[in-house]
Image 1 (cartoon, rainbow, N blue to C red):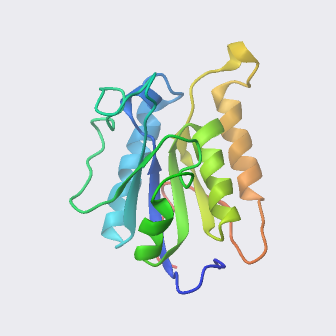
Image 2 (cartoon, rainbow, N blue to C red):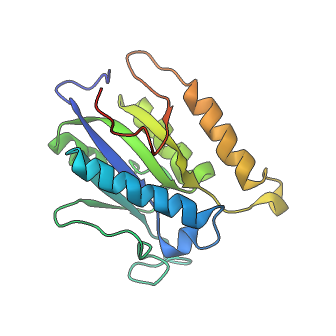
Length: 185
């Protein structure tokens, strides 16, 4: 269990599922559909949904079409939105305050981009004492192989592989599928 005291609750993090981030992402429609399913399942299970939204003054300024969440996802009233400008969703944001205020010590992580914001946030969560599970079929990235990166399918598979076996003292990592997320224990 989490090393954070008095934090028994879980939240679904939906990271950067924005027009400008996932427009050219690998298996975009399938991943967005899985994220929508996760959001529905979390709400039905009484699990908080926390939205993370990236902005970049040069490429994706606030209020631009690229900055907006994809139209397939609908935020519910009262669900927090954390605005970020760095890959790690905790870095220079109010994410920690949002989670602490809701007694959250365990995170279920979905969204984009696998090789940047997803990985950074997973590691940031574990380093800060959170349990962090990755939803194996609900994260994606774009193809950056022309710059020497592996193809997106391999980036996703590798991230799932190493996070499935990640460990830290007193904390739980691992992967779960959309189908198995938020099932009663």
